[in-house]
Length: 506
Image (cartoon, rainbow, N blue to C red; front, side):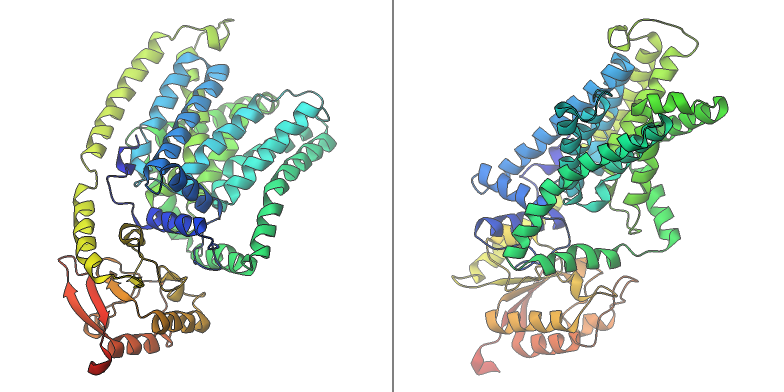
């Protein structure tokens, strides 16, 4: 399932950036203050831990990914086994495990590390004794869910659909049981757990003079980044069903949601729904995840990883209903023998899953990895001691491969181009870093339409997309590069190496 994320392959844009920030974190640099990015800080600490465990290699991080996937699968199977029995637990967990290659995109994404946190929160909540919420055990359980919610939020706020669903479930159960005070108390206990993570993190950023930069990048920039039309968001939601469709996971989840809603509305089983917290959380969480994943209108496959936990609850319910349709049994689900319906359903699903995994495996990124490795080999002789490297674009993995630092905190330049966010002071800071460090430049804009080419002729043909607003201040940057740099090499994919001109040539 994690084959495409093996360290023998190229890390990719986002993964390369997280690894770079994790490495700099280990040398004393501070996220946001020293390196600009708009993700939550938890991902950087995870990458720093992975690099430490791997002795500087990506194998330590890959081991963490493997552990996260194993824990998620174990929790998924345990939750569904307890509630729906052996057949639904096995088939559902197998279905989403084999959906991972469809949306992993090489791994090391915030959504991937949120997966075990979501399943663990579900496990705690769905196995929580509904007794006295003032007991020490209940307080610890609810506070633990709050801690998991905070870790997930500070990975990426869009990943918290499951936790919102748990909060809504608590409110629904409290209102239906005419105990609103108890529901408020439980939510308060969750907030205490959330604060146990949030407060130390805010203190850490404030003490390191990075709190303003964190708010600016992680909230103000993301507010602009997530702005999109209703049509784009609808397209993003549809893309999620397509991404997880080949193994049937998204379609089965949709079928489970529609079926459960029909039963609830048709037979008026609202009271029964509040007593089945597994189904209630699934019904609330699934549409929430669909909406949250499509807020930006972008259709990156890894955005749909948070659908998995919510989908598993609905798919488990659907398979259980199919297997027990027309039957009445007093046998507890965990003791029931898989019926022939479960087996037939599982065989069909397994064939679909294995065929999809096969086609995914043959698309492993050998070619791109070989191309990048060749470019890095040509770069390294030009990078002497004390030389820095500016990657113009978003290919941050080049920094990890060359082991050469960026001249400033804008490791990639999206914030200099984003409509509604780009600031003249950022561009001035970028030019100052360039003039001070005089780095070697690798212009990767030929494979990135979001960034303008540095070459004046190529820039004439560049058409900004609807998310890019190049400001007039960028002309100062282009002028500086054209005056002080000379491009000496162009690769097959259009990437260009530009070196500082010698003083005598100016």
